Image 1 (cartoon, rainbow, N blue to C red):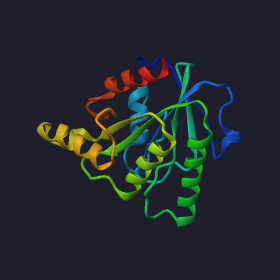
Image 2: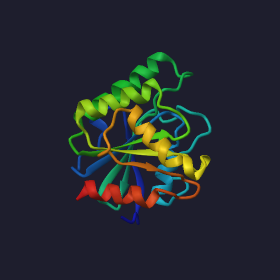
Image 3: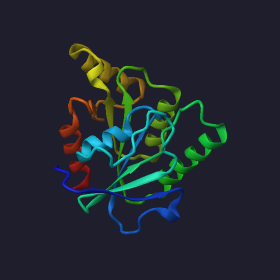
Image 4: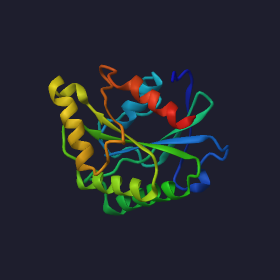
Length: 194
């Protein structure tokens, strides 16, 4: 797949704000500092489509990006950032849960995890939610440029195992700096949109 056009459309806190045009959704989830915004920018080949912040926990809404006038890339609020008040964390969880439950156009979840670290409790809970809702998922092991080449594949396999996903679930080591894994991920998206 080649992304030729990408634009921010809207932000929402609940179903009333979701686009109503029936186009497919591909949603991205991950911890607050895992690099979701950078990945969106790398996939779309744009520097500033998704706002990248040095401070975790900045995505507080569900953001919808229209891709090739054909589908939405949906950036869900990051989870697991300790400095955000508990009430706000609960609000984010409610937002994500409602999205999983009510977004009828959701075709795939891209779950982004940092390849350098074992999954957190929040990562494991997100994996359970994905299985509970029975939504197709592709795992992206981000920041792969930070590991030596021989460590990447075994570490990615370890992450998949620790998250409880079977070998049928793709895991793509990815780096927004070197662009490693970007084309492979785009090709995976195309599979779920056909």
